[in-house]
Image (tube, rainbow, N blue to C red; front, side, top):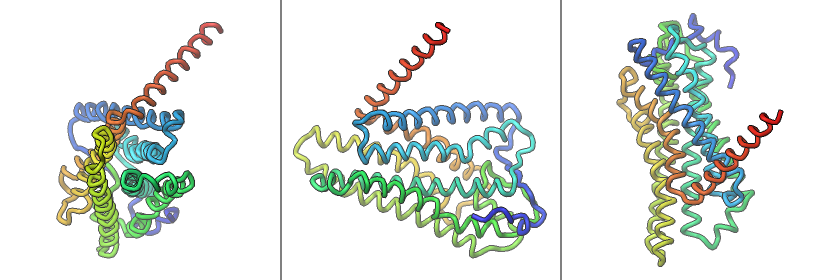
Length: 326
């Protein structure tokens, strides 16, 4: 992405002001503390899932490899916006450089697109494992799983590249105040000095396509899974399948429910409080709930997380013993 020469096309604007949540200093501090707690819990929860998948040999299967990558994605997803938001809660000049703004826009939307691809891949994995169990081990080999993971990452980071480049080449003459706490495409298009129908159409079309197509694919996959599960003779098998797929569906509904309101609704306004709340929800709250949903509804994951906790305790005790001996 060529952003080194953006200054020439940006007119007199060299930085943007993220308005965020205009409120008193006391409320800003409260929001900072609340957001910091969610941020730390998100890093810890998703980090624990990554450690569990890496350390437990029983979790070296396609489903958990996808889950480990998904947790890794959630960490970088929250890191694309939250650290800068936390700083802006405490400082008076909530500025972000022109280049930094478009880098944030690119990574925020790219990781959101990558999440759509990973949720689709996880739905396909569960469909194939439950509906075609005899062929699953043959088709879903380590190499095929690796190719699937790489495809999700590559496609996600290429999906929104063109809209970011188009928006970055628009003239920005001022004002430079973005009525949001992140650099979003809607407010940036509003600030442009020139009308940009092609940029707006490309941004809206690609956002809507990735959201609607992936959501439709996931719904079809789980509808077929539901039909297959209902035909299982064993009640315990049905319960296990429902438990695994139920956690996936909970994450899907949590994520897609918020982003559809933001990026698919054609009449959504970018000057009200609602877009900020919805963005805050799917940028921070969903990334916190995802590891909780997966770990609490999955016995194998809970067992692996207990093992991680025990290893962590042993490491702390060993480190403490060495420190006292020295």
